[in-house]
Every structure is written in C-alpha cells, then in structure tokens.
Image (cartoon, rainbow, N blue to C red; front, side, top):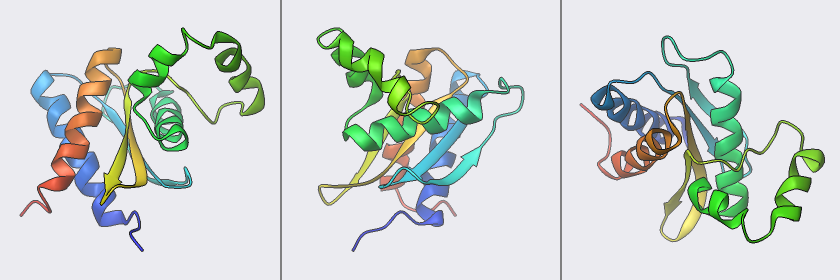
Length: 140
C-alpha cells in the first residue's frame, strides 16, 4: 500500500516553496494524505494569517475530488448549485479554488498539495512544482 509519508510531504513542500522563491513570493504549503488529513504545513514568512487554512482546504478539495482545484474552479461554472452548497455541507474544510494538485503515485491518489500566498495562478504553479519535485526524490 502506498501511503503519504512525512518524507514525501517534505519533498513536495520544499519543491513548491522553491518555486515560490523563484517567483519571488512568500507561500504557505500544506500537504494532506488520501483522506484529507494534514501531514505537513509550512507557513511562508510574511504570508497572510489565513493561508494555513486556505492552503489546507484547497489540498482537501483536490484529494476529495481527485483533480486539480484549477479544474474544480472551471467545473463551478457548469454546476453552480452544487458548488454553492458545498461550504454549507463542509464549512471550512474544502476550498475548491485554484492552488492545489493531487499527488498521484502509480495511478493512485495518495494525497494533495495546496498552496496559498500568491495569485491563483502562482499558487497553482507552485503546487504543480511540488508534485514534480516529488518525482525527483530527496534533496541531498
């Protein structure tokens, strides 16, 4: 069974934060496991006080729906009633806005990474970089 480990979460978070540094922004990165439980949160210096909550809730949305939150934001246009009802069902738990990407290993979603602190596109770019960085293995 493939599981989200702390080592894997750290690789993802560091790769996402490296991308944020490259972009010149401060970023909070949260990694959750396949059930949406928080494994790791790294709050960037100078980020808003709520980025720990929003990055986690974005990651929960990505793992729950098994797709990027950028895709979820686009889906909101086709089924607005569902998406408007979601916060009432899961208050504070799921944020289907751009900035999170599922972590897939061997075709199985094992978790997700959510980013907050930049624009929606910057958050998405950093989350993508986190997943790509995971594939490179541990940094020495």
